[in-house]
Length: 264
Image (cartoon, rainbow, N blue to C red; front, side):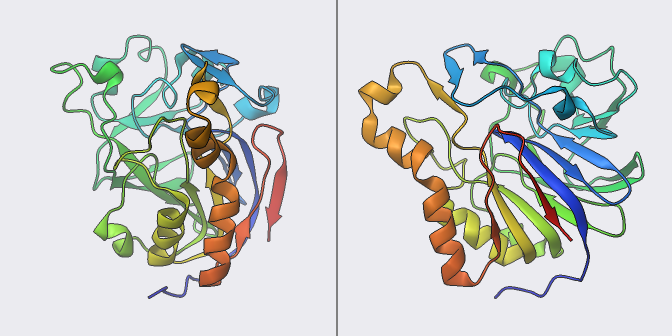
């Protein structure tokens, strides 16, 4: 059963592609998992790279250590004084983080950074850097619920389906991942229908789909065209159909084009 979220307003949200967003709360700007590169190993960006505006924020949230979520060159574009909220243990697992102001957190923590109250949530995802044991095996993948006391947002990061989605307090905006780059999603990501069910469990005034339509591996489109269509092309249509069926207000943005939507 969908719970009624509290009333509120949001200045705006801009989706830069993949899981990179700038969420402008009335009193602070929050960036999530910045990835602002044309190429990442075998991946190619299918949409324009974000402009300089994508690297302006009061605080940056990093959900896990994978290179497409903790990308050091993208983080370096933010001003040195902008704090990064990262999984506990990230500095020991990722060289290059020590020059930044870091707030290390784990599921169950609650912190206030740059005037934003952040509840740290668990995620079902193996977020280790390069899947290396020992140095990174204890570093958790995270989700976040955050608010400036006027507007609330839920960003679960990369995760599979979890029963405790229903324990997250209702929010104004839910920004949920709905796709990937293949060849499969596996059990540690949400597909479009699962994402809508997750938002319904939490309760939100608006929902924005992310983590699709931005990066794709070289040659995989040719080798796996059906998977490319299912994971890269059609997720937003499936998300919106499922949202309509549940009465959810879904927000549409084009990945990577810097569109901003006002959600007052």
